[in-house]
Length: 366
Ligand code: PMP
Image (tube, rainbow, N blue to C red):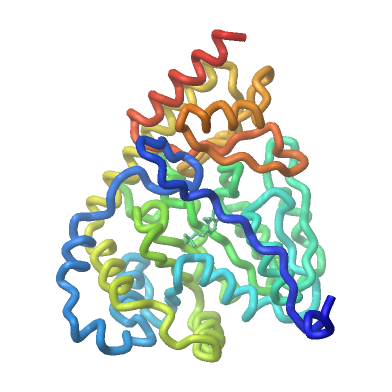
């Protein structure tokens, strides 16, 4: 190795899901929303003027943080926007996990957490899930440098209720606790999404006024159908948000481009669209659960827009390959403990029907 290479920061990167451009592909591998974003989003994008592109965007993304703040019911100085929740989470690792003590997160979880920890030289300790893929609260009561977990967890879809989150927070008053709610909007029943307050009862957003050290991270990639726009956000106390901004302005002042700001504002203006699409996905998920059970598949009771499925006879690795050959793409993780599972994103009813028909033929051929 040439000597200069000793001075390079070496990292093992995260592997994103594939984005193949294959005609007719049924793409159920990256938890994208099968429905388009609100028509208002496309209108906002086509209304962009040359001048707004010529100039730098508002470094504070004020219009967007105000729109998000109005949705959550907080003041805008409690909201931080970033380039997808990946950007917000990376910035949060850098900002809040600086003690040198190990950060705690589940062993089966979003596989970006250990990558950020390694990138920023943050020590971490993973905690085992229980036999039903649940996060075990007491494992997070020991001394640590911070706690992070997704709720619902990924790739399992398992949801922790608000009381469980509160218990973890009560044992972690001296560190920052991050709840990654990329999938939380799918965590209530379809009727409540349509008629309730909008914010699910199990969202840690319901606790941000009680815990100054709680940061809740959400995204427009899933429930707002805008994975391609890269909009994520964090909500927490003024202090947490101000620390995040200090880190952001020490790194890149203009994270959110003009188009993303306009698109994000339009999405938050169209609450009815968001509720309708979210409710549809939840309904499809509950139907698909029944059909997969009838074929012998088992899975944790997902409250997200994906199912994490296994079959007693059909090996997941082979099933993944056969599905792919039939133009149905799901996600397979070749990792101990979950290497006989497939993560299947909830698509449209037609897409899920095609998947079920394929699986029915596989099961009948056994
Ligand atoms: N958190 C979790 C748990 C996820 O699964 C994802 C999607 N890969 C993200 C965060 C990041 O999503 P985005 O950057 O698109 O907001």
